[in-house]
Image 1 (cartoon, helix red, strand yellow):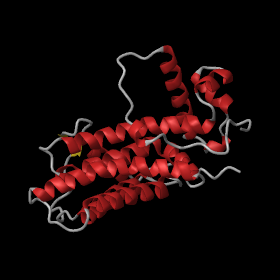
Image 2 (tube, helix red, strand yellow):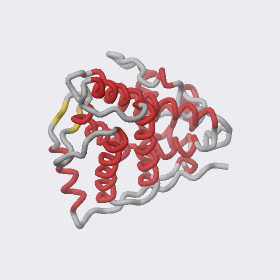
Image 3 (cartoon, one colour):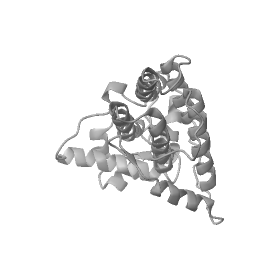
Image 4 (cartoon, rainbow, N blue to C red):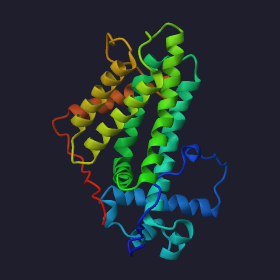
Length: 267
């Protein structure tokens, strides 16, 4: 471990079974400190790559001392891991809610699910880029990242199989293989956009492309109009007011580029 709190090898995410965690009615003092540490590293990653962030800076942002940070996490990478776990847990919960609601079809919820992923990348793109860059250098981390993403694909595959059984989607190819392909397509395209400086119109274009591409991969019919409502945390549909507002902002000639310095590998 070096002065920045890095270590040679550390799994980027724990096994997928632990991603969702458990809900607690009240946070203990230790829980609050852990949350403050995670919030601190997320804020710092918005300004610069992980390799330029030190444990001292993370501790200062959390209002803690360096030894206190090491009491909860054994390295900087472990902090990033936990922060990613927290965000991914929320995304998987949204997918699970949609899959568990039999009144919602895949066609009606697909755009909302993809928008949920893109919204999360908009907010936490620097965090995801830091995790993905580490995944490329560690086999165990790569397996863990794959397991988490494919857990979301399992939810999508369940929805596809359910709609096929109802006659809403024509059969064609293995449902899980198609869902996995769709998930990795979104992940790769998000990484390629958010790991560089880009604009709001580019984000909007990516949303449109991902919805269209996912529909084709999954065998959904061409949408006659603009894809429908988004999906809330409980899996129910909601209106697209927020999305429409984002679209207007994206179309503005004053749209500013978003900085996302690539998280270069550390030596």
